Length: 382
Image (cartoon, rainbow, N blue to C red; front, top):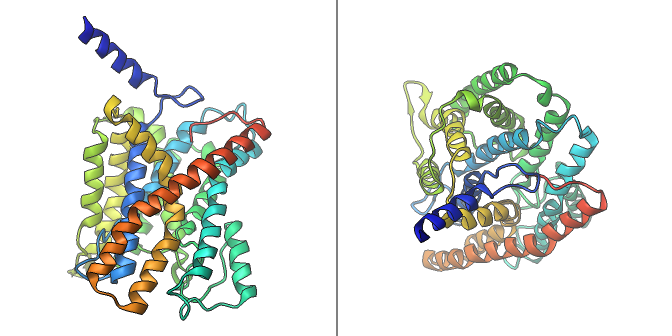
């Protein structure tokens, strides 16, 4: 009798994991978003600190986490908003999305400025005039392309590099509200197919999809966004026609680790195997992971981890890079033993998680709650 009662409670707990708007929550997708965020932090800290082609370089393909985020965003945006346009204006949609995303943009830009100014190891590297630095900060606050600053390798978001993908996220949301939401699944599929072919061509030509974050290859950013964001929208629209295997967070996270940790592949017969591998992950593997995750239950045991991971993923992604720059500059200017750098990294990883959690708990969530009340907006799924 007790076993039956426990089983019923477990089922009810799983079923009751819903958003405040009453829709079922994609807890495994939340968990996967957190897994991808942690892997890209590992990618940044190890590669910035040890160089990009050393035995200690990890997660060689983790830049593809951005494409994974774009795909997730398209899928979840369609889920959250496709059926709400009869009672929601375009302006309301933009307001909801700004409240959801922009508070952490302000935190990331401010941490980027402080890190740039206060970095004790960047005095000979971080050289920029005060007016130019102020302009870079203002544009970062507005999530606009910033002027280049010393020590930042032509990044379009000079003070907080990862924010380039948030700029694309905004463009994706604008395109969704104005155009994409009105398109049929078949049209979305055609757009995905055409942009996918272009992505394959670029990946093969460039031998990688690691681009779009800096000015020399900024044209790659909208292409990466289009292929993955439209793929997410299209997947949501056709999901009922697909087989939906249920695979949990642990296995799908392991798949991401394996995919990102794969070595760099050579050229063969005039083709870039490395670039084609990147394209295959984006166009074939990531859609499969999203569909599997969307239709999997985390179970009561993993529910809290998925929720925590999902909540932390965006703050972690948008706040970690200033601290990575500091360790990178330490390694480049002081030339310490690798064991010393490794020790710093193992201290840094829990530190940036703690910073992200504090930013989430004491700034992002309170500010979003206040703005939501201020503008009378009903809380949404994302």
